[in-house]
Amino acid sequence: MISIYDYFDGEPVIETNRLLLRKVKKKDTHDMYEYSCDGRVSEYLLWSPHPNEKYTKSYISSLKKQYKNHTFFDFAVIYKENGKMIGTCGFSRVDAENSCVEIGYVLSHDYWGMGIAAEAAREMIRLAFEEFGFNRVEARYMTENIHSARVMEKLGMKKDGVLRSAVCVDGVYHDVGYYSILNDEYKGL
Image (cartoon, rainbow, N blue to C red; front, side, top):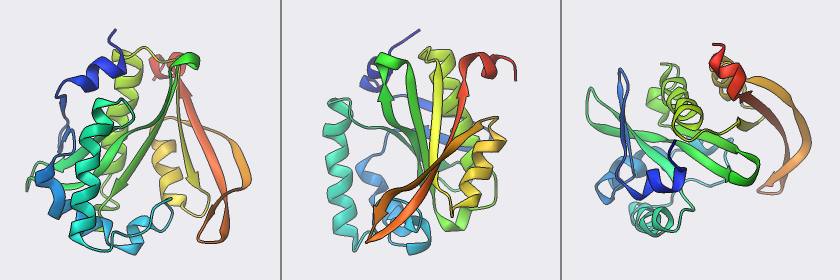
């Protein structure tokens, strides 16, 4: 087993059938901006659409420090067919003390409905259990986002419940659903 911190100190690259997963880099600025400025992409997330490419460039510049400080554990999702960065997927929260990580993902609207989120998130679950030895992987979503819940179900995750009015975005409260999978359940799949 390797620690998630040591893993991200390197330059990890994961390959699936259709995707390359690697750290976000400065060269991804234009591709990230293309999907991050789309309100449909951020509708059920905690961040607003990026206002311009300069904002995206600044955000990506901050990630280098976050990777180094072990506060950011996301991969750029690269669609191998065209080499384009189409989203991110990774670990949005690490609770090493309780052997738990939370996964998250976001994709360009142009790539929705193709099973790409599940393909990338499946690799995060594999990493969490097989490489890092975590006991629990969880994911959360605003309950209006039924497509995200379906991704979690495809991954073999089980619904833990819903926290009512758990987040407030732009003055609107949203219920948040939780799904999880345990290491023993993953081994049984």
